[in-house]
Length: 255
Image (cartoon, rainbow, N blue to C red; front, side, top):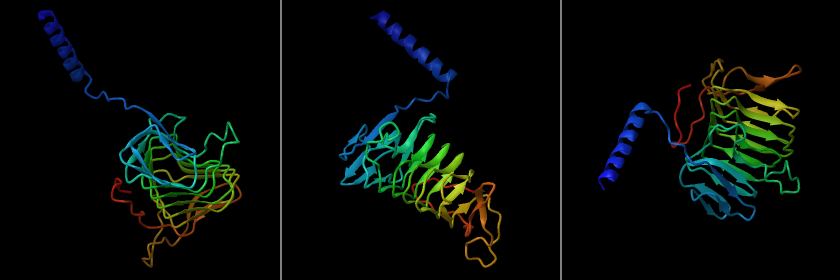
C-alpha cells in the first residue's frame, strides 16, 4: 500500500513538472470523417441533426464532411467546421469520389449555409457538381476557400466572408452561370479563373479597394480589378464600400 501511494505521488509530481515545463501543449482533437450517405443517413458524428433533407449542426465539428446525396441543405447554425490544415483535407466535399469512380451520382442542388469553415486545404470542394448554393458562411485560413472544377452548370456564391485564404475562390474547366455577389473578401482577394467563362462577379466588398463613393450610395465609383490574364481583366463593376454584414454568431473583424 505504501509503495502504491509513493508511486501515485511520483506520477503526480511528474505530471505537475510537465505542465510547468510545457504550458502551451495543446490537446489533439480527434479527427472525424462524416458522411451524408446517398440514402440520407448521417454517419460519423452525433453533432449533425437530420430533418428530412436539412442537416443542421448542433455543435462544432472537427473533420471533413463527405456528401453523397444531392437536393439537401447543410446548415451550420453558426457552428464551426474545422480542419487540421492537412493538404488533402476538404471541409465539405461534394465530389462524391467521382474522380476515381465516374459512375457514382453527381451531386447537385446542395445549399451550404451559416457555418464557419476554417483551416482546410479546400474549404468547400464544389467540383464536378451542379446548381449548388454557398450562402452566408465564414471561410478562413484555407488554401482555397471554394474550389469549382469541371462543373458545367450554374452555382451561386453569396453573402460569404472570406478571411486569410490564399485563393478565396478557384474556378477551372467549368461553365454555366457562376454568380459571385455580396461577399466580403478580407486579406486575400484572388479569384482564380482557368479555362472557364468569366464568372458574374458584382457587388462584393474588397478590403484593398481604394476607390471613392461621391454620391454615398455605398457602391464605389470605379470598378475593382480582381484578376485576369494577358487578354482581359476581370472586374467587379459595383464594388461595395462596406463589408457585407455577417450573422451574429460569426466573429467580427476590422478591415
